[in-house]
Image (cartoon, rainbow, N blue to C red; front, top):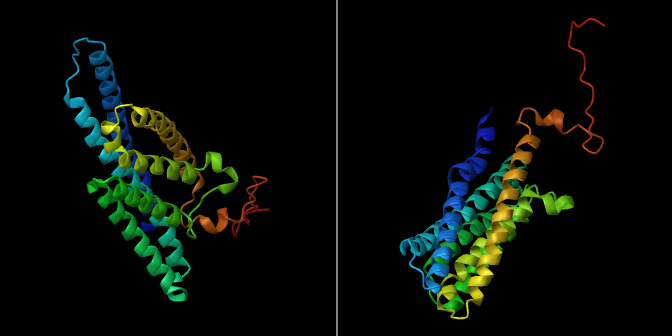
Length: 241
């Protein structure tokens, strides 16, 4: 494997080491938080400590940051690999500068979303963060599998990241809303997000099998993917007929 092949493994490695363990912890704390709330509402004495709610909120913030960061890493590799291999930086330097600024803007917007208190600013920074991911995802080099969008690692990942951003943006509203409408919406959307993360595990594994090593690409990309055939290799010199 060459260096570029190892760099391609950073995204899936971070998913396995950081994001998926966080998902398990957040789901566990979410379940305990809900069970404690139901027990307390039923006038029962709960054995679940009150701190689970705070832990759920704290880890939820970490999860959102990790998912957005993982998405940016996953987008950065194909985008900059395309820029370097096709020398885009010499052909369209303004485009490269715009892409770099979009990465910085998305990171800055996520940081500001974490510290914003007012609903207006939370909405603005959440929109900027989500827009940054979508705009970067539209750049050349990103493999989107649009013809199979329902089974695309890219589209599932972007949707999951946008749901995490939305969950972070409405976090304060959940605790201020006495009607529990925001809480109900939060539960529904994040339950769906868990299913999306399962889909990410499946599609990510599939794509790792699809992506050839850099030295294999010249031959692999001559194959007919529709008919699942590849050209017959030329016989080695000295081979008997």
